[in-house]
Image (cartoon, rainbow, N blue to C red):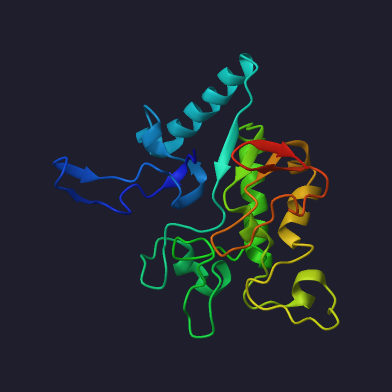
Length: 233
């Protein structure tokens, strides 16, 4: 399950049947991709959250002592900020049109089924994702990642610009926002990164927008697929 800092109060409301309050422990509404969920840690709120980081590192270290590999379930397809009516927590306030796939009038594309779609192949966003993954490998020593709704990571960004993405114009470039890319820049960057190419990469090869890539995920020879079970491609 995801353990990035997430919004467990996303659907907070009174549950009259059980007489308590609904809290989201599912973990798929990420708030901060560079910090572990501090409330999963016994000392998470201590030392400005740094104790949660140390505790997470200790968890990985103890798992490795027992020859157990640790894989993170990561959610780069959407964030906790929801659609255009959602809260402003981080990315929306920094640059809404860079971090999310937007229609011309500002509506959010929703290939994730969760209100927004992370603009994964925008140059700024894909560098952010690669930096984040490298952090969890280099600093936290995780062994690999399972990418939730990974097909979103293969979709063309809004404000598509072939010159900006590839450095050269593309003849007959008719790609629109969300179009599947045969050579997604983000997947290329992850696959050829000197740190990330050495860990296990597992794609959930579909998304809520109907893009189904099981057996066809752009893998560069090093990706596996999640189909309820992990299979190598």
